[in-house]
Amino acid sequence: MTTPATGPLIVAVGGGKGGVGKSAISANLAAAMARQGFRVTAVDADLGSANLHTMLGVDDPGPTLHGLLEGRLQSLEEAVVATPVPRLFLVPGSNALPGSANLAHARKLKLIRHIRKLDTDAVVVDCGAGIGFNVIDFFNLADRRLLVATPQLVSLQNCYGFVKACAYRGMRACAQTASQRELLKATSSQSETERVSQLLPRVRGQDPQLADVLEHFLGGFGVTLLGNMLDGQGEHNPLHAIARMVRDFLAVEVDVFGGIRRTPLVHGSVSRRRPFICDNMTDPAARVMMRLAEDLLETDLHAVRARQAERGQPTSGAPGALADDKSLPGPLATYEREHERFAVDWEVELRLGDAKHQGEALDVSCGGARLMWVGEVEPGDAIQVTFAEHPDLGAFEAQVIHLDGNTRGVQFRGSDVAERTAELVRRAQGEAPVRSASLDAASAAPAG
Image (cartoon, rainbow, N blue to C red; front, top):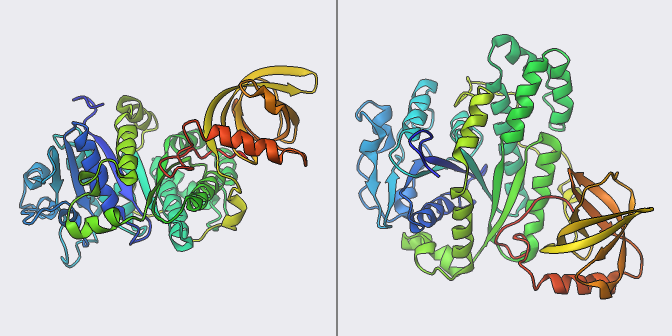
């Protein structure tokens, strides 16, 4: 994962809204990485409201990152302190320092440079709440970006607004000249319903090279979404809905990893000043964090840094952003799915008119399936699907409703399929469930 050429893996944890459990997730994610044998440093970049040291059981944090910013420390390494968790270290932040949240641009860049030079395998950056430039720039600097949200509407509104602000801030940073920045400003409608797919053609008409850079940036600007404080399995649906809305309006991919249930173990961990992952490794929340840590630690840093270098993306853009609107652009309910999905690895036989294809089912639900095959198809096409491993269920009539390369979402049709689809799902539940369905991870592609 880590080489001297690339430096540590940097994971930023943001929340858009305060109170969603961002710092608790940061503490547990860092602890999960450390439990897998890596040296991990958590950085409390929640300027002015630092509390990560409390959650990690550090009584006397000593020097903080503000010591570097104020010139009392020569290196951020001097602020690193050990925590009770083996292999997990902390760069504490400061509380209640007047003006500490209003970081000058040059000092922010200095801090970012020092974070990248920390002698560690991975860095978990606990960002602050809101959509201020400091928060956005800390989030954007990361190799992997983790967004924490609860299923409540207010949290989801802030979630969308946060991703929008980060994406537009990043696009502005892609503009290397004053004329390019003016072009971005002039071509943006500044409305909450603006789609990036509408903005990019306007840019391309005047500066095709800039449009290519913006598309490259957005294509590599992925966000992982983790739900927190969930009370039931049905609450994963709004998370997927917001992910689809982000992709639709902002052209940014959001991978919904699943969620953490609200349990006494999780709730009490803050008062115990100890990550819940250290208390019960068999708890579902602990297993989610371990799988999330594994996923993040598998990041190909060389590929990520190569993309950053290719687009010439600076670590942080100059002050100013295209948009900071926090409103949702449309009804969230229109993006919600009706049915849970379950991951499968089944062969399928497909018939489109007279053409036959062999393919693979990636997941199924009572409403449809996500299939992969090679062949020409358009949304609205009628298709017949036979699951080769379950021939007794017969052929399913379906309609193609979504295309993503060779992956296609289909919706089952007909008044006589309810019993067969219910049986299909029962069999799928014997397979590994889609992460969203079990609340321990998820795919965000529409289907069913």
